[in-house]
Image (cartoon, rainbow, N blue to C red):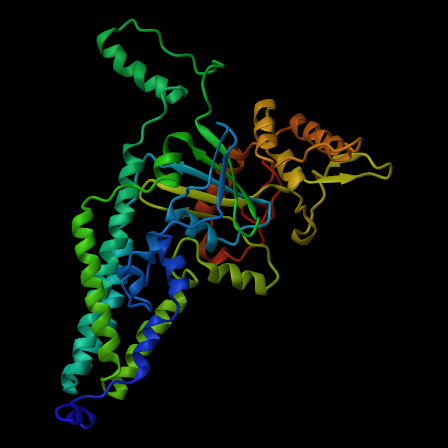
Amino acid sequence: MYPWKALSTWSPFEIDALGLVTLLGANEVDVSVGRLAPSYWLEYMPLLAGFVFAGDRFRTKQSAFMLYNISSGIVTGNLTAWFTRWMQVQEFHVSRSLVYWEVDETPQSRWMYIFAPALVSATFNSFLLAMTVLSHDWYGFANAIAIILLIIIRAYMLQENRHAINQTVAAAKPLPTTYSGALEAWKEKRKKDPEAPRPLPHSQEWRPEVAKILIVMPDSRAVTMFIPEHILRGVFVTEAPLRSPRVYKVVQWAGWVAFVVHVVTLGMVHLATQLYVVGLIVIPTVLICYGFGCDDSRIERGWRSLRGEQAKPYIYRAGPQLKATVFEWPEDVEFGRDGKGALYRRELAYIPPEKRSTARQDLYAWLDLTGQEQRSLWEWHLLPHVRGHDDSWWNTFNEKQRLIRERPPDVRALKERIQAALTTERPRRRALYWRYRGVEDIEKGVK
C-alpha cells in the first residue's frame, strides 16, 4: 500500500469549507455590478462571487427583453448586457415608468468616484494586511493579497467596459436624416461653398432626433424610453468594442488565479482573520446590491416606501456624458368616466399611486401615436386584432387617443422641469413628497 498509506496521515495544513462562502450571491453581484453603476463609497471594496468577473459573466447577454423602436419601426431583442441589468435593478412600474436618455454636451468629472472609494478600500484592506503580518498568519496574508488582486482586476474590467461606452457616446454623430445631422453636414459643406443653403429646422423631411422607444421586460413590465437615435444602436443594442481584448483576456485569467487562491487560503487562515474577511466581503456585497452610493440607490426608495411616500424621480449618470432622467407619466394623462359614462382626462384631481392606471391601453394612448406608429404596434402584435363585431376595445382606445391629442404631454418639458427641481433641491429636503401634476405643476413639494 506504500506510498498511498502515507496519505492517510499527511496533513501539513487544514482546509475547511469556509471558502465556499465566496461562491454565494453570484446572480445578485452579476446584475448589480454588471449594470456598470459606480458607487461613491464601495467601488473598490471586495465582493463575493469573484468568479463572475473572472469568467466575464457580467457581459453575457440576457434574453426575453424586447425593444420596440416606435419612431423608426424597428424591433429587436438584442440589447446590451449592461442595459438589461440596469433595467432589472430599477423599480419600474408595470406601465407608467418613463426614462429620458440624453447626451450632456459638457462632460462631468468622474474623479469623485475614484478618490473616496479608493480611500475607503485602502483603509480596510491595509488593516487586513497589518493584522495578518503582525499575527504571522501567512495564509491570511496570501488571502489578503488575493483579495486586493481581485479588486484591481474587477476595477480594470469594469473601467474598460465603461470606457467603451463613453467612447461610443463621444464619437456618435447625429444621423444625416435629422436636422442636427444636416446642420453639421452644412457646416462642413460651407467651408468649400460659403453660399450653400442652410437647412430649414421645421421641414417635414427630418426624422425625429429622439426615438420613441417601448421596452417590454421579461416580467411584462412595459417601460417608455426616449433615446437619441444616433446612440441607440451603439450604446443600447450592440456591445461597445473594448480597447484591448487580448489584455482583457489575460486579466481574466489572472482573476481566476486570484479567485482560486482566495477560496483555498480562506479555509486555512486564523479565526480572527476569517471573521474579518467574511465581514469585509459580505457587508459591501449586500450594500452594493442595494445600490449604496450609486445614483440609482434602492435604499432611499425603500425607506420612502416604508414611510408610505411616493418614490421621487432621479437622475442616473451612465458616464461623463450619458445620463437618464427616470420618472413617471404625469397625473394629467389619466382617464376617468363621468356619471354618463363618457371618458375625460383627470387633469385636476390628485390620484393616489395605488389607484393610477396599470392598463397597456392607456399607455398606448399616452404615447400619442401617429398612423405609422400605430400600424407598427399592430404588426408587432402589441395591439389587439378585431374578432367578430366586438370593437369595444378600439372604440375606447380611439376616444382616449382623441383626448390625448387635444393636449399632448410634453415629455421633454416635463423632464427639464424635473431636472431643474432635482438640481436645486437641498439635501435636507430629499424626503419631500413628490407629486406629478403635468408640465404646468410637476413638483409642488419643491420650491
